[in-house]
Structure formats: C-alpha cells, structure tokens
Length: 236
Image (cartoon, helix red, strand yellow):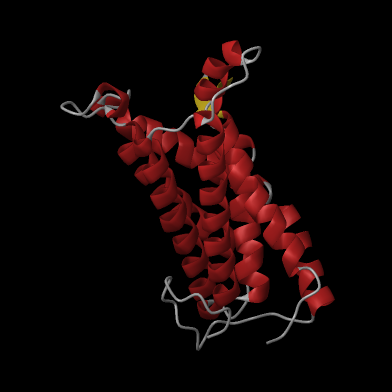
C-alpha cells in the first residue's frame, strides 16, 4: 500500500478540528444577530480538509480518516465523562459544576452529534468523489461547494432535529429546548453559515489541493471504488 508524506498531517488537523468543535460547541455566540454555537468557527474546517482528503487521496482514504475521527471523538467523550465522574479534590470541588456545564454531554446530544457527523462527512465525500468523475476533474470550486451544501445540510438537519428539537414525554434532561416552529429557521441558519464559510475558503482549498497533488504525486479518481461507508480498507 502506497505511503504519503502529508496524509498524516491532514488527518491530524481533521481530527483535531472535530474534537475541538465538540468541546467549544457548548458556548453560544452572537454573529451579526445570529445565535450560533462557537463550534462554527472551526467545524467547517473539517469539511475543507474532508474535501482535500477526497480530492487528493480518494474516497477510500477519506472514508478511513472519517472513521478515525469518529473513534478519536468517541475516546475524547469517554475520557471527559470518566474525568467528570471521578471524585474531585476537596479544594477543587467548587469547580465541579463548571466542569459539568462546559464538558458534560447528554446522551441525546452525543447520539445526535455522532450520527450527524457520519452522515454529513460521508455524504460530503461521496458527492465530491462522484462529481469529480462526472466533471473529469474540472471545476473544483463546484465540487467542493456542491458537496458541502449537501453534507452540511445533512449534518445540520440531523443534529438539530435529533439533538435539540423539543420532544415532550421524555425526561427533562432529554426533552430539548428548540420548539418545532423554530426548527426550519435554525437548520437553515447553521447550514447557510457553514456553507458560506467554506465557499469563502475556496481559494485556500485550491492552494492546499494543488500543492498536495504535486507534493504527493497523486490525483485519485474513484471510478472503481467501493463506496460502502462501512468498509474500513484504505483501498478499493
């Protein structure tokens, strides 16, 4: 199996963006009157690097990295939860509520986050790979933006619906705070913001993709690739 000089760096940045986004998402920020999770400043970068992975190294490599990101994110969540469950030192006990408020996760939000991540990332990678074949490698801007529009729509729709939509009849901690009438607007806001973020970053994506292709001596077209998202091999 061929080795690549910069693949490990791209993978590391991709995974770091995912983990950091999960940690800072608890903070809500006001951007020109739009209320968004702080994760929007870094989570779209994972889609940019997802595009780079698929465009340069192919869907099979991107698929493997997506699952690596999932595993690393799960490990981070388990470590944070375990750390929170450990008894605090007597002189630190007053800080425990702050730890739980910032780093605590409800099972519903975790499930929504993981499902949204997998659905969004795999759709993004699949659409970009198929568009690359249909355009014969031309119009990179159309492929990156088009795949992001689809991937981010899936991610935002799944996470907000499964994680935040108010559902009566559940325990209070799992009910969610978002009323049904606010669902379409909230999804649209996050989707458009994240998609616009990546569209503005298109010049940087061009630079990264072109330099990596030259440095690695590779430009994969997934004409014979098995697009099964559950296949973990980095080839075929």
